[in-house]
Length: 465
Ligand SMILES: Nc1nc2c(ncn2[C@@H]2O[C@H](COP(=O)(O)OP(=O)(O)OP(=O)(O)O)[C@@H](O)[C@H]2O)c(=O)[nH]1
Ligand SMILES: [Mg+2]
Image 1 (cartoon, helix red, strand yellow):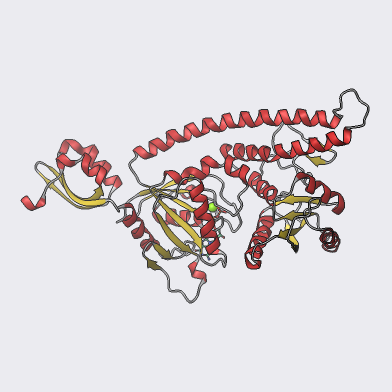
Image 2 (image 1 turned 90 degrees about the horizontal axis):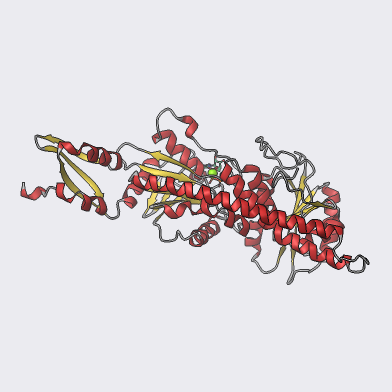
């Protein structure tokens, strides 16, 4: 069985229709928690073609590819980079480099080559033939990781949809290739048997994509209902965003540990030193004494060149940030490439339409810099450590400030029959003073303009008293 659906088996001459060869130790359809797609000893060579990127920047992206390979359960056994002015059409890298790669595979006893850029199905096929080994590209490896990690129904459907969308053009490319080969076969129909099979597969896939989209649409509707309910709860929404592995889930867990609902340790989220540990959205209430309570969401991280099919399939998950009142952008300050990651995060936020939301920049993992005294706050920036819970108070104060940007202090006198209103305000804001008077409860608090307008009739002008 292949990993993208029970009914569809799209093997043609040992090649999968997406141009990828089936991994040797495949067969964990149950998602049993083993993250290794390939057997534990599988070794990969990472390869890339640098056309015009500055050397340092290109090295960073190759290093990231190594991390992706590791996240897939493979061992990175070697690196091969070609710097050239143009792509070699047939094999992507030049023939001399292909030969070098072949020798390297032998020397390292590698089972797979992973390219940093997107290859055409034809290039994958040619390379696999010459190298006699499996060839994947960056998109392929990210898709593999996603399909291994997806846990919730929604994430699984999203990944399946992404894989199929990734496969479809490849299938068409393959058909063209077969038509050309089948030209002089003398058959009445000039479609070869392989081609007919591909046509069937194509229809299967298109049908399945449509079906998946329908199911995802239903889930999205459910989610909107939940979102509306959350909106009604009146609590401000804060979203953790940022590059993958920056420490978003660790931040969520640390805040939960200190200020989450008491006695619910199972409500923590998964954190791990690997790319794309989180694929689903989790929302929790954070209620720290002396601070304004809010809903915090943790979701999938960003990466450079996030494959388009994945962006499309995960749009609704990625878009969670769009509905936030405030974004906490988690930055791995200990990563030499953090500035580039900030830029990619900014671009991704713009792409999902979240660039107008106020942002607090959290320079996380600052505990790794022995020169730096933490916590340190600079306007809307904070240097801290989620893992060691250094700077939580300071972060919460920044969040308070940011969420209260349009807020104003007021004194309200709520009659005793407005108990529900009082309760709502207590859940939503920090009440600075409470006084029980014969005519009602007098409270002093800082609240939003919208709420103040709503409660205007209970507002007390203190100067007159
Ligand atoms: N030293 C140090 N390590 C940290 C800190 N915060 C997180 N980490 C580590 O960084 C790794 C990644 O953390 P996660 O919280 O899983 O990162 P994430 O941003 O949720 O990553 P994805 O879900 O994969 O996008 C883990 O090994 C954490 O222990 C920190 O403040 N200091
Ligand atoms: Mg995470």
